Length: 118
Image (cartoon, rainbow, N blue to C red; front, side):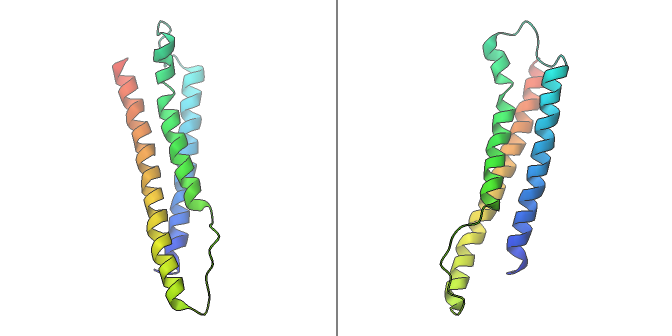
C-alpha cells in the first residue's frame, strides 16, 4: 500500500480529469448546437446554465492539486520522517480527490435539475 497508494490516487485523478473533460465537451456541444436553453429565457436564466461548467472547473482544479507534486525535505535515511510525510500527504491527496468527485457529481445534479425545470 505504501508504494501503490500515491500512484493509485494519481491514476484516479487522471481518470476523473478525463471524465470531466468529456463531460465539459459534451455539455458545451449541447449548449452550442441543441435547443437546450429556451430562447425566451432571460440573461440570468441563461447564465444559470454555466453552473455545471463552473462546478466541473472546480473539480478539475482539485484533480490538478492531486497531480501536482510538492517540494518536501525528506531525509532518505530517516524512516520516521518518510512515514510522517507519507501519513500527512496521502490523506490530503485523498481528500482532494473526494472533493473533486463531489464537485463533478454536483455539476451532474445541477444539469439534471436544470433540464427537469425546463
